[in-house]
Length: 287
Ligand code: BEZ
Ligand code: FE
Image (cartoon, rainbow, N blue to C red; front, side):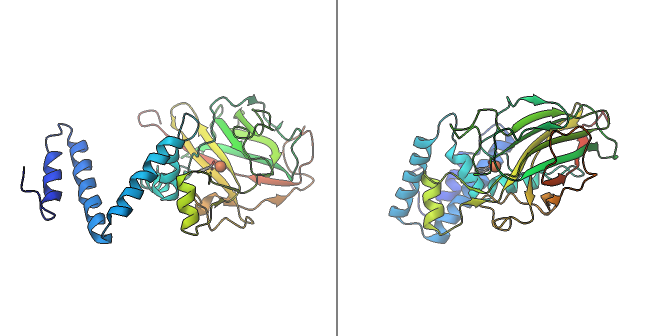
């Protein structure tokens, strides 16, 4: 092919993908070509802009390692992570939200009612709820896996000053599908701003803040797991999340703790309480 012009190059590239044996791969690559070429034409991309885009991607690769993935952060700030989540949402299940980079699968398993506060400062919160299936039946033995920042907005997995297992836990729900733990209120924090994605966010004058949240993965045998977050209505960033993770049903008020609140045997009377029930969808054939 030696007659490539600006008018026929898009079709030529699409044809070049045309022999891909997997029809889905073929379709995705051809449509990607269509949209990327249309974008380049629409904005009239210059040489300088294209070179700085390549440079941006090179730096994203340079700063990434087994703990940090700048491309995932790019997907987050572009809203692609949330768009894929929303388009693939499981009807009937608690709505999902972003996983983020600070999850580690090795959180300590704690008993029902555990106190995670330890040396942490901040407002203490009793977090309780029930894990149910879509028929409203509690799921005994469901696993609630939670991780959060401390009151300074730092995760244990990123902050050398914290014990590696601080403010994260796995808990097995009791016979009534209930979970309960006491912790401290997490704080807002900024996405990592020291890399090329942060540079673009700053250059665009965008807010780098995430509203404070608890992260959860909830799973149970024969049910589809969920990855989600719980946010707080009073947080000043709740309507301006840098990664578009906030969904209406995930925003809750922290209520004041009443005297008769919570399960018996708590180690302390927390300042606040939060009650959040999760719904899991049974896997097909096992309902
Ligand atoms: C988080 O919630 O942990 C997170 C999500 C996306 C980017 C950075 C952090
Ligand atoms: Fe987070």
